[in-house]
Image 1 (tube, rainbow over the protein chains, first blue to last red):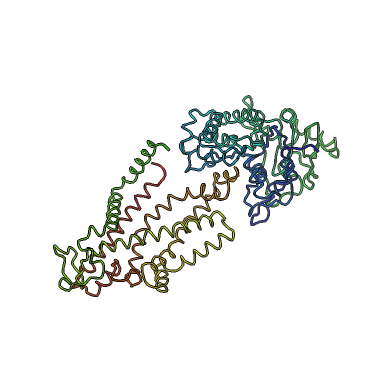
Image 2: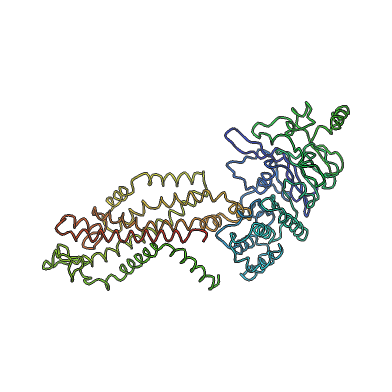
Length: 342
Length: 287
């Protein structure tokens, strides 16, 4: 077995609620190799963030419950690690950019002090760093994210900066010391479209330059198309389709992926698309079958009772849908295509 | 931080503080009372009157030029004794706050950060026990059990004071622990101590300082109440409450024995409350 940088196997993350367990992440499998870029796409509340929080174990341990699964980082199971080992990984190997740049910075300290903290916690080389060296590293990190006048920024408090600048600072903090894996949790969400675009380009440039592996979490297919090599489409706690970026856009298979694609407004199209009917399902009482079945336009009897397994359709393209199994007869497909045309 | 920046910050703080004229009045009263407490021997006309002193020739004199607040039944100058009481009251405040605030804040931080765990339960339920008893009663009970005197009244007030800070910091810490920047600190692998003292504590400090400034007046009042019932400073050392209770026996003939100490308490507490309001305005975010 070749070694992956991060290997998530059959991860289940449940939240305790008064009604019972909410099965938010339900058997996610995901691998990423060093230096690769992958994207996780799905609508709000489908468990993308929860999956990533499980990776770094920042979930509230009294509310989250992980009944099954393994998260292997360089063949070490993160879920079974002791607190100190985990702390080392957080300090040196993996960093994460949060959705809310404005909330991610402590309001009572200057940006400089907070970047120094990150540097001093990830003592990559054991040479003791003095103030001057720290400042140099921090200034370089800020310059890397294209903020002018880094010396002044170091002295600023977060409230003196704009949202876009804060997000850049967060990226700078995440990449100030070399990391093997960067998890970016919708880094553009709180920003306007132009800044969002800049942030994404910046992120890609930095990740390429520093050879960091990237997991990009987003709800926008447009974003991942430009940024990543491989896309995981997630629906209601399940990975429903995995493919390389080009393959996915050329040949989307899962009905949910198709629905997502249709949701992207086109300049040439006629107004806003119909979208996908319905909502993300109830996590406390999920259906025994495919979780997309209540919303799926092609739903069949088997979809409601049995969970589809990941099926490799072509090289590097897998999908969890009964439509592509052999038992799903040719006849069904024909019926469908007639329906589609009509 | 550079010198120019520090100067700029100080100017901003002064601007915010002095926007309310009453806070400036409060600051003056506070400074005046601190100066009185420190230089009591120099300011007062008869410093020996603060100790054991009897001179029946000048006993029970009404306010006049020589004794601006009159004298008591032993012939001691009331003004002198008031200034010396100020020293006792302020030193009590300093001791009480400098012990109870760190303890209270620390316990509140722990309980708030470990919200919902056994640490939270133990600390907060203990604090609740203290808070559920009327504060003056509790202080009186503690002071009465110990040997009456300044030290036991300090212990008593300290014991009833910390839970207020614990409660306040607990509330803030338990909401701050869910803030993204605390999660972020956990994500970069910060230690527990770092999270408690570098991330959460600094965000609670401004309200703690405000509460401290406003509490000074209350500590003085509680101290005066204790000494009024004879559980504070013991004679012959003067204290506000003790002077009032002594004078009350000779009301209304020797009214100056009661009225001046009462006015002094009111004056100082008023001053500290104005000052506290000013501190609150000063530490508020924004301009």
